[in-house]
Amino acid sequence: MKENWFVPYKYRMVEKISIPSKEKRVEILKKAGYNMFQIKAEDVYIDLLTDSGTGTMSNVQWSKVIMGDESYAGSKSFLEIKDTVEDLMGIPFVLPSHQGRAAERVLNSVMIKEGQYVPGNTHFDTTKGHIELAGGRAVDLTIKESADSSTYHPFKGNIDLDRLKEFVEEHKREKISYILLTVTCNSGGGQPVSLENIEETHNIAKANGIPLFFDAARFAENAYFIKQRENKYKTWTIKEIVKKMFSLVEGFTMSSKKDAIVPMGGLIGLRDEELFKNLQTPTILNEGYLTYGGMSGMVMGALAQGLYEVTDYEYLHYRINQVKMLGEMLIEANIPVVEPIGGHAVFLDARKFYKNMPESQFPAQYLTAALYEAGGVRPIEVGSNLVGRDPDTGKNIRPKLDLCRLAIPRRTYSYEHMKYIAETIKEVYQNSDKITTGLNIDVEGTGIRHFSTNFKLVDPKKDSLL
Ligand SMILES: Cc1ncc(COP(=O)(O)O)c(C=O)c1O
Image (cartoon, rainbow, N blue to C red):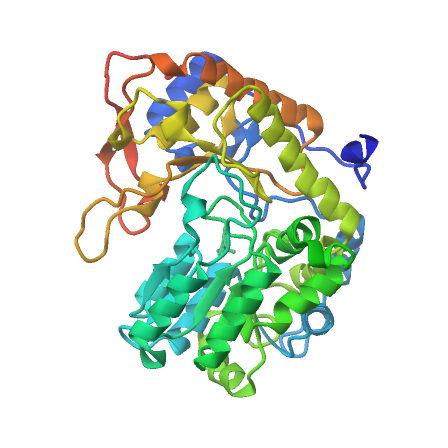
């Protein structure tokens, strides 16, 4: 179908990338302790570590960079964001922050009282971290289908409404700070949440006087999936769906590095003026004055424009389809991926990929390193290394899935790149049955350990991961 090949851009600027030799890549991996964060970007051919801040801005966004208003107070560029949020989302109060996690810090420091819960659909790691830092506990109530990589469910990011009702009944309003829906659900495989599920969650929240918030980093991708997969909304425009989604929440935090397609930035959006006022001091102390909050005027102008561009149907169709194409190339080769393919990334199921490797030997971490060795492709582990240890018991948490995430930056790589990535994965998969040993932790990182933990091969005699 020619629609699948529709790209609503032409390119007039390129950036040279190259690949180190195979021998060099083996050496680089060893030196990096098989940790993707420890590899220099210039040693990476295709960088799929994240879709965060790595997208390509449009010519109109670049024009906004030049027009950026750097005034400390009352910046025109900030007012453009505020107007855009009001126009697209119908949310009147906006606070800026330098990125998503900063917005989380500001919000949670005020919202959470010691010991309170924040139920949701698989919180992102920084979100969970900030909830815990503020004395709270993140509770994952995602539907059970999310744990099975091979069953199809159109909205695997949905929260389990029965479990949510039970949780609210058991713990009552006072023990619950707010409910959080992450759209789309990054840690759950980039899976969307349906509007029906958002509406039902809203009803439970409202009936119990509990505020409902979005982690809205990929709100537009979620809206596209609603249009594609939820019959009731198939004739709605993306902007109408976005408006409806946000009409059901009290507020949101957003990493603008994803769906606003800027390299840096974050936002808090709120309906309640009193909460807005309460968050002003932590914003000023942590981020900066209320009309820049850690962002430059240049970024803010591009961010406001990015929010409009991301809600364009043609852009979203091309974006989601590119990710899907990569996924389909892998499915055709019988490679175990999380299905259906998510919005911003393809996730490989590493336990199924390496059937003969013990689960305790970090199969997903191993797979990230193997893909780098095979083709200079840099993915990220979303599994046992990332989830770390239980804060109460100190024991390693065994997650439902051990995933290797191939995040696709927005408007950055071509179809040829997708094909190269698929061929690299196929090459690694060919021999995967024969891989019986993985990685052990050499030096464990502190805090969110996946950035800094160094690994060593379980079998020290091995000189290749393939
Ligand atoms: C769902 C989600 N929430 C929050 C964040 C944190 O945002 P930032 O990286 O801008 O701090 C991310 C980042 O990847 C994310 O994916």
